[in-house]
Length: 289
Image (cartoon, rainbow, N blue to C red; front, side, top):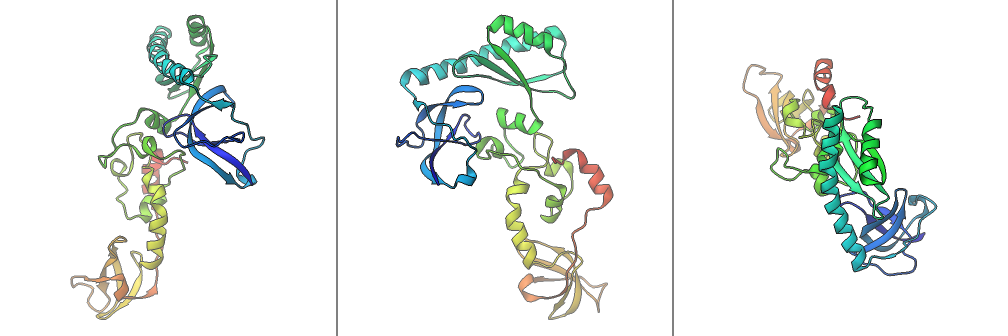
């Protein structure tokens, strides 16, 4: 076990562990630490606590010190510089006629490096652009291509649910989302309804899946054979959240289906959730593997 603090460098960024150097720190305090990118000023997201050694990427780096008012002021100044650098980089991209979209700019705390994040449909030869930017800023320049999900996280916005993007509010890490999850959750396999603003499958399909996995264990699937008070039949529709089932009775197949709760039936033979090849091919582009 080791005592650590959790530090993040973006509002909803990944949390990294550091040795607190014997100091007691509270959530929300700013600290100066050394990272792979150099010296950075981050915010304590998790105060002092112990974690198992297996969860630590060794060697565990020690916090340098608590941030001073001067450090916080410098961090704010860097944010202002980033806005200016963004505009300059846009001009340079246009000058070189590059097929790329600038998304964000970050200064390292000590101003030794400037990172430009962009998206592009294909590989971009930005060597001349880097030379131009280096001559303007007199700092090490790094251009980093990101995915469309990262772009949405950085820019933020509103999802089809009317709420801010989950990725820009509380999801610190992205996890792969598959078409299978949408099918298991009983959603219509319509790209416009199950994809986010980024054009990929909605992140909520992933973190809601655990609840659906539980419900699927207790709810007969479409195609399952069940026994009801009115007789044996086949499930033609189910609602995982309410537990209501529509059942076509074997002895009266042309009659209106009976509607009962899953607790009122006995499962004889369950069915499998299948994705047709045509469905999979049609939605392949929005699946993030």
